[in-house]
Length: 383
Image (cartoon, rainbow, N blue to C red; front, side):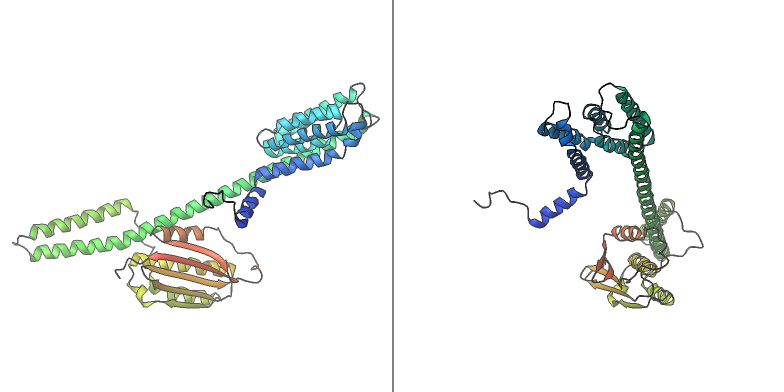
C-alpha cells in the first residue's frame, strides 16, 4: 500500500526546484508584478476617497489585475503598457506606467521605447487638458510636464540601457560558444593529424614488410597474397592522406609519455614545481593514447601557470583495470593572480574533446581547497 502512495519530493529535490524557479525569467516577472502592485497599493486610500466609484477593496482588485499583466512583459510588453495608460486616465495612477515603459525598453529596444514614451507624454498632455481630470499633478502645464516627462524618459532610458546590456551579454555568450566550437574543431584536426602520423607510419611498415615477404615467396603459392596485401596497405595510406590534411613540415607530432618530463621542467622554470608520477604499465600504451595524455597534462600545467602561478602541481598517471587515470591537482591561490590571466576559456573544451574522442571522460572541479582535473581513458591493452 505504501508503494502505491504518491511519493513527495525530498527536501533537497524541492530546494533544487525552488532554486531553479527563483532564477528563472518567469519568477522575475512575478516579482516585478508584485513590486508594482505593492507600490500602487499605497495609493488605495486616496483612490477610495476620489470620485471614481471605487472602494478600498475594488480599487485593490483593479490595481492587482493591472499589475498582473506585467507577467506578460517579455512576450507582450504592449499589454501592460496599454493597461498602464488606462489606469493613468481612470485612476490617475503613474506607478504602473514606469514599469511598462521600462519593460518596453528592455525587451523591444530603443525605437519602441521612444515611441512608447512619446505616446505616453501625448496621452498625459491630453488628459491634462481634459476638464475634470485632477490638477493635483501641477497647477500649470510646465509643472505637470516636469513630473510626467522625467518619469517616462527615466523609465524608458533604464530599459534601453538594460536592453543593450542584454545584447552585449548575448554577444559575449555567442563569442564564447564560437571560441569553444573552434577549439573543439582544432582539437579534432589535431587528433586527426596524430592519427595520420601514427597510423600512416604503421601502414607504411605493413606495405614494406608485405613487399619483402612477396619477394621472398617468389614462385610460391602465397606470393600473390603478399603482393595484394602490400597493395592494400598502400591504398589505405593514400586514402588516409586524402582524408586528413598533412601536418606542415615545421610541425612535429605530439610527444608521448617521454615528453612529460620536459613539460614538468618547463613548469618548474615558470615557478610551479611538478611532482610527476607515471606508472610503468602506462608506457605500454599506444602512441595515440600517449599523445592524448601529453596534451591533457600540457593543458593542465598551462592553466595552473595562468591561474595559480608559483603553486606546486601533482601529476599522477596510473593504470586502474581497463582504464588509464590522469589526475592533475594544484592548490587554489588565496588571492587572484595580478594581473588577471589572459585566457580564451577553451582549454577545457579542447581537453574534453581529445579525451571523449577516444572513449574517455574528463572532470574538472574544485576540491578540498584545490583544483583537480581527472581524465579516464581506456588503455586498449589486453589484460
